[in-house]
Image (cartoon, rainbow, N blue to C red):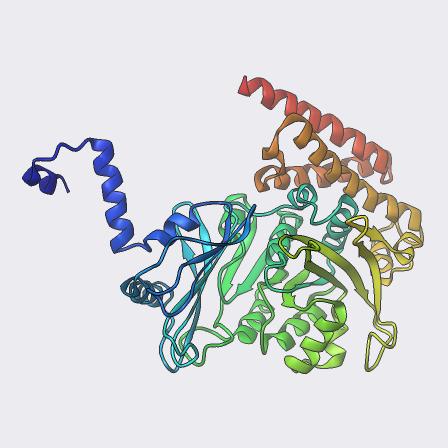
Length: 466
């Protein structure tokens, strides 16, 4: 570039030279304007439809929803991107394998990439990119965004500490993978975590940086046939031979369903087992597992909790918001149909009028077999529903107070993964300390000590900043 500028008699500054170099790299070995779009943290989806070169690229924006851009990629751009994705992923994209799912990692962004070609797409190549948040979502961030409320977050924290089996369900774009990501931060850092994904979407790299004991497994995509990658069901069964671990499955799409429920049965009393699955209700999840994925009905009973996330639309259809709409317990005393035989018991249900996830009478009255099973393993809680409920409320109160401090002091940093992981460590340490010093678990004292700690931390960090 410098030689070219000299030959043309053009004066160029060092900053201009660096900028031109970045552009040159972006349009040769990189992904061109796709990189520019994905570097905008308010863009959630980018789609480039076929035939490439004749249609505009479309985006989904955090503030403006679906938008059309003034970008029309060239046909050569699409062919170049497809070649790079084949090389980066090591996966085929041809007539025998017309779908390629992989991930794209840029300097300032991560995205899931889905590519289609002939014969599935008769007009040639098309691309869809789902941008991931730069840092993991957390339950306090979801509280602030309105997707869940403090009680739901406290209940999820309680289930995770209680080593329950969970499926997070929802439609495409409902936020189920992000909610699973946030759930990982609720696992104590002393426990080992194994993640199984066909496309790396969970924030595993960031969690390792935060000191989590985490092993990633990448398996063959459900739509791929053959190849060198291990099948998803084999990957899950392999994880069972790797010792006592929390098992997190990125998404249940195919034959891995039976292996996941097998691991749920084996690992339910050891550590949390969780995954995401498509389905707009608990029964839709059951129907998908049993009828679409051919999982045994009895195996489905290994699921303890189903959390359903769905988009809520405005009356004009122009706006939508992500919300958790149900937290449902799966009972074990049914044979054929859990819906008809009262196998599903809602613990929290979304009220569209109040825009809130509200506790049901079953939760308030302690009619939950899952919560009773967790309580039965804790001396202070066995047979004492009030003590269990107070602990759930303690978790909810701490998360609510954290959000209130963040808003009041304009400290959004305390809602991010780094601090939330530290906060969860402190919470568990305080519970242990109070139990040892008081001879019992005093939830009010735990909150008092936590509030003193968070106030001291915020004051100290504020003084350092100034």
